[in-house]
Image 1 (cartoon, rainbow, N blue to C red):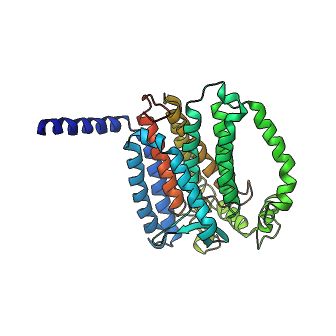
Image 2: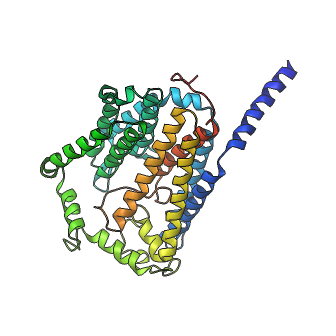
Image 3: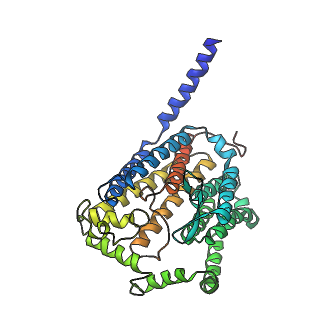
Length: 382
């Protein structure tokens, strides 16, 4: 019996060693570099102190790494089986926010669990990708061109979309919509549907403007079109962000030498506007370095998706790649004044736990899909 147990144990070790041999260090390395950069910038945001940002974020990163390795090295089949359940749990959390959510920065987006505040809208992005991947993975090309097969995915989008808009959190809601549209495109939805959706969106714009937006949201769009509009009010953040980023020049003002950030002219420098702080202190070189790392991650995620032989893993990688790209594209475009201000953190960089943990969970799923890329899977996960 002891020999049998030893053989089982050795088999488990072999399975783990095989997983590690398939582990994509090309994906893990840039993630770790960006996480290290975040600690460096957050230490500066704390004016040369580990408190209140850097140490707290370091603890969250360690927890995120535990989540990442657990998800990466686990079996892929339970994630297939639980995809809808994970989506349902994330959706229930968002519903709870509506009734017992904690309000911060003018929005009711957080759940207070006593020992931690979590933002469920960050987790629904990954849960939605998982649900869509499971739903579409075993459909044939004929089914993917029939509109009836898109009713459930649209429903999976619209329920959290409506709840998140009501929080209000247009940035996250927009991200969910773009992720879903991207997945529809990847699976092969007819191109004419996208044109029709775009036309309907344009026709609905006046109704959304006058009846579906808050005054401050309209002011942000007006400020985007006319940067001088209310420069001391609604436009203050983006005005200070442009000053800070532009003053960094090519090489930056130096570590912990940024005048706008160190003298607290730049609001939310540790969260949504951390890219601006990076640009002020490390200049164009620092900002470009981060963009190169992000591009590296996107390329590796794309490669993981293309080399995955099972459709679930492929869609998981593609969906998370879209999620990650939309995350940083919206944030960077926002702080540079290329689109209206929305509350979207910079992935792996911004201070906060919900965004970081959801992103690390997503990376774990992508790594898991890569490790099991040659495994044949069924809709039941067997």
